[in-house]
Image 1 (cartoon, helix red, strand yellow):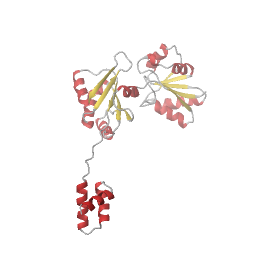
Image 2 (tube, rainbow, N blue to C red):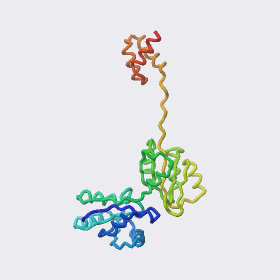
Image 3 (cartoon, rainbow, N blue to C red):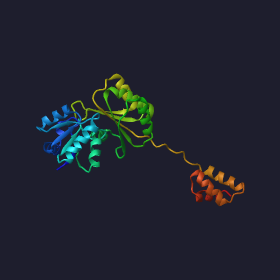
Image 4 (cartoon, rainbow, N blue to C red):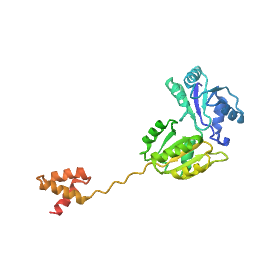
Length: 275
């Protein structure tokens, strides 16, 4: 059957490879991989022998069409990434789009994801979140990205490489303030570590320690600003002022309700009490 399979692979621990993922990789005609050297180690571990096609950011247009042509001609293909779920913040997204546009059936074989795994152990709210991927290496674009999300009230998730972590933490502190944050690195691997605290704590820690491994940053959302409680007394005085200037009581209370956020009946009742 001519299909594209989006196959999740372990993010570190090979024991997390699902039986179905092994089965599909054993049965497809070819496998598209971000880095064929990394994928070859995985396939060798599970005794899988299938043709590999290199598919990454700089050749995705050319190879995407080539792969889709082969699937349309009757072959089946699996796409994998170096670790985790392909096609999410990943070049595989483009291959899925090409196949969908051509009416090729696309099926998913779920597997571990770094973002969801880090969110689950972060200790931060998980009911609503925004996955933001990697911040740009360009300072201007990075600032624009953070400016865009700084008022989001739900949890934010970013990926980051070790050599950029210190700069990113400083940028986060400047743009978002000193929020709670969870830094997850090397998940499911021997040196797995989750650090929890505030952004300032992480800046201090990594000024003294060298970042190592790939990171997932989980950051609390913006806090809802408390609105000052409206003063019913001020509203009543404003309504009485309008009345003294010649407005009808009902009109004055209606106008005041719009300005102060109370109901017209609340203001009218208080005005009448003070008469």
